[in-house]
Amino acid sequence: MTGILSRLVQFALLVLLLAALTNLGLFNLELLARGVGNIGTFSASLFPPNLAVLERVSWAIVETLQIAYVGTALGAVLAGHGAPQQGLGFDFFEDFRAGFILEHPVSQMIQFTSMITARVFERFPRLKVAFLEAGCGWAPYLIERIDQRLDGLASNQVRHSPIYFHAELAEQGVLSYAVNAIGPDRFVYATDFPHEPVHEIEEVLAGFLAREDLTQDTKEKVLRDNIKALYALA
Image (cartoon, rainbow, N blue to C red; front, side, top):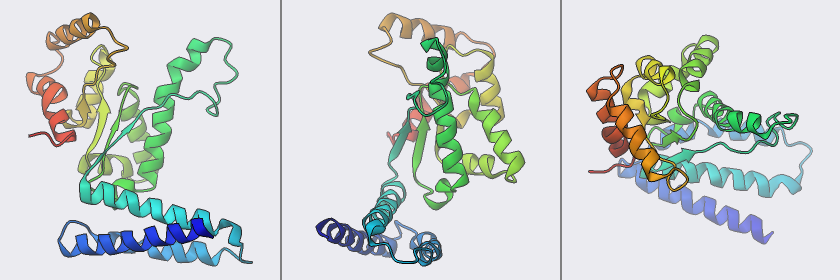
């Protein structure tokens, strides 16, 4: 019961904080209130009552309010990084490298699809999310696939939300295609330092700057402007 009481106290404090931020114009409590009906529907389905799940339910509510505060009021950055091979269907590979090739992009495709279909970016419009270390070739394919089945849901959220994809500068055709398909404002460069040696970083940067399939404006956005926007740098 101590754990449950602690969660309820956190819940009450977060509600008061969000109400105050709403009065200051820093938070849209109305958007959050739209989900109250879902909580009621879920609660009604808990019959007969099972007190064993009460703590988990209360904690889920607290986590939702925490995301609302961090994403809407603070405009924080959530960086996605896929890696685990277990549970993704890669266990049958005899060659570890096969799983290594797929683990990052497949994990992030799952993360992206989950957040888009849950309308996370509509509910928390200031939440900044960057999908890193998986390249960007998967992004236009998945956005179009979701759009075809859910009436443009993915492209609408990407267009109007601070969602960023990792532009691995060594990517050739897929990088220019992704930039043209999604727009240059949604891509950032990130090194893998210190895993990636400095001389390799310098070589990749030099090659990227010399590319003729990307405009100078796009290069500046990928290397500087979009990163400043992502981290709210002056």
